Image 1: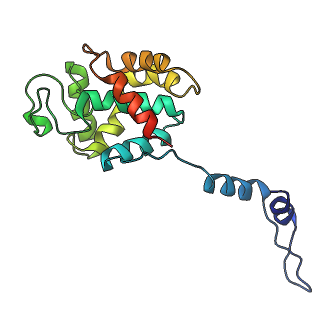
Image 2: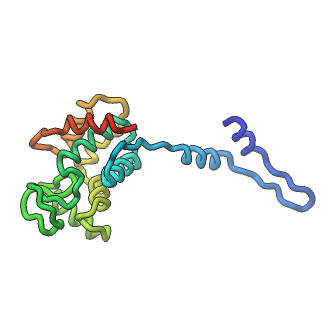
Length: 187
């Protein structure tokens, strides 16, 4: 790294009437740092799980346990099926008439309608993974939990409390088991 900085700080001087090229070391170091950014990967992840994992990391959630808990909760809610209506029917957003819908089973009227409003405002499809992920991080429930999710090196219980703030689940189900499984599969 020392050699890279020295190289970046060196100005290339050309003879005669030619200009001197200068390099901004802060910009160059920033480029190097961005190129070196690493993401956790999931072993045997479905495409939807892998997309969600990368999306969460792009949101600043980098702790392995925090990511595992979020993924485990999504799996409990929807098995990562964005077009699932509570009870298991695979339908479009407009065809889910009762219960929750989508990745996190948006159930309460303001959350369910919010998904549709977000899709219309962004030109997205309320039944797609991408639209649901972009909506998820705009919700006040997510924002209330996000501070905890972005705090590294905490326990599963700590992140599970954040997940409850975010989702307000009624049934604990297999959330903990799914979270442990994701933790083991993240590297």
